[in-house]
Amino acid sequence: MRASSGFRAATAAVGLSFAAALTLTACGSDTTGDGTLTVVASTNVWGSVAQAVAGDKVDVTSIITEPSSDPHSFEASPTDAAELTDASLIVYNGGGYDHFVDDIIGTGNSDQLTVNAFDLLEGGAHAGEDEHSDGGDSPEGHDHGDVNEHVWFDVDTVDATAQSIADKLGQLDPDNADAYQANAATFHGQLEQISAITDGIAAAHKDAPVAQTEPIAYYLLQSAGLKDVTPPDFTSAIENGNDPAPAAIAATRQLLTDKQVQALVYNVQTQDRVTQDVRATAESAGIPVVEVTETLPEGLDYIQWQTNTAESLAAALQ
Image 1 (tube, rainbow, N blue to C red):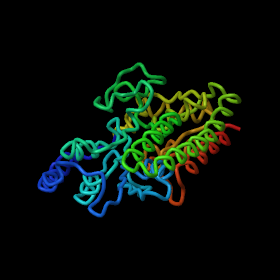
Image 2 (cartoon, rainbow, N blue to C red; image 1 turned 90 degrees about the vertical axis):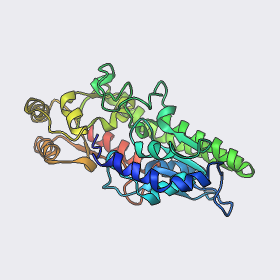
Image 3 (spheres, rainbow, N blue to C red; image 1 turned 60 degrees about the horizontal axis):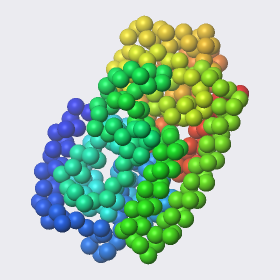
Image 4 (tube, helix red, strand yellow; image 1 turned 180 degrees about the vertical axis):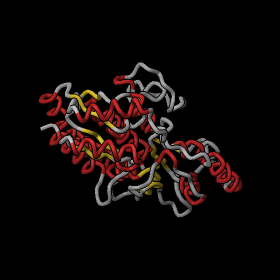
């Protein structure tokens, strides 16, 4: 991923800045000083999920909200650190994706409630592993440790995350526990609408070949029954912020010019000259491009965003 070389130093500075504050809050607190519950999410993706469960009972704050932001290289400010350490509940992706959260809360209150989505991925509790390692055994060769960490594209994991949020909000606010459970149930039903779209793709286009600029939509493609045939050397280089080898670029371009794939899944948040060239190649060959992002587009909630993405993928394959 595109992690900043200055991240560790910035995080260390944040930790020092709040050392005194953490000492004062070492006993833990479920609420702010005025008794208000606070929920803080690492990105607005998980903030949207949390808000769907919290409803009108609790306001949710998201640290990363800009569509142009890359969470992998995000550097937390002292204000961000304060929001996280003071939160009643923290919701984040985990798996090394938004590691600034782990770095900050690791120095804080050990009793603070958190929801780590990656740890809720079935068989995917590998949050301590290096997200850049090459295990070599995952489908299509795209792996991070043992499991791909872009779990917001996995509907079952998102559903489990929403349920965990409801359970922990109920623990913090027993008077409204039933409301949180009801909201989670409603959200579950909305997630099933997304699954219906991907199930339809799987039924109509089983094993259809597609390409990606990065393995970001791995779980979306998996649920849709599609086959990512992009050279792993290309996607891993792009994801890590490196230039792919010329042979990997040539092989990826060949997939498109020869129309060996039916769609190109394109991450617009981390595009560079190489991926822009790949997109241009796809468009010249008449290959549909399906745009994906790592944070919510402006004006959309999680359900709207993922519904639009699934529908775009289905349309591209027609």
